[in-house]
Length: 316
Figure 1 (cartoon, rainbow, N blue to C red):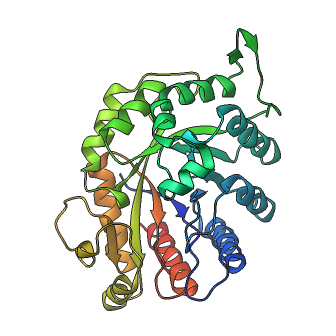
Figure 2 (figure 1 turned 45 degrees about the vertical axis):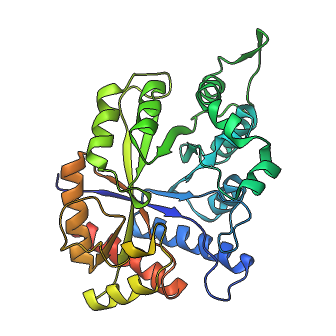
Figure 3 (figure 1 turned 30 degrees about the vertical axis):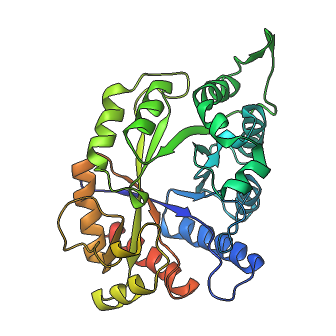
């Protein structure tokens, strides 16, 4: 592979003394610049009652960002489907697809997105809702292709856009890949949240994929953590200051010069990081990467990491 595709995964962090309003403004700023720098997608994550994460409603934020951008695809990474009615989710994202034709992705996941008490306050018995996940995905698919019925009566998620949203499932293991393959949806493997070998997970998805009304052939992305700076030393400094998902003892282990084993965070110069992503693309047989850059130093330094990576990839 001679080229890789970059997209943005934004958890919308509230960094330092920033207010929630400032954090959301920075999310818009990142999306606007990501479009300018050639990123294919901007995806917003969903979390609830988290002190330093600012987005409980990706669809609302994406609607605002859509009005500030022109071409970049906009999506959720992910809507936490166990909490919601599939009909309401389909309505929200069909509305976005009607407002921004050909630009909307609907990524769904099954994580709680908050504490146990927050999850219960949001949707009741979360474990029971997770057990219903296959039925909810099936219902969502049916709503997106206008084949859904309730008590044998047709129900349509309106508005009905000319170009439907793309349906993706996100996960961190073979089980989530198997579900995406069974339902014939796109699949995003969250390498930045997993120690599992992504090559094995994506291979399982490809092998088991069943064509559907949503998608004829397997479609994949890898969500990978990246910290990029002008020098390796500066990148390491940012890594030490970063708020990383996962255990603290993993901090500092994930550098581009390390082994080719799965890593949660790739840290280095633009050349080091882009070369590492190219090797991953060959290993994983997947050229599309969803880039998660954690809170590092300042918003400016986080934005600069995305810029440096985009420039390096454009020169490959």
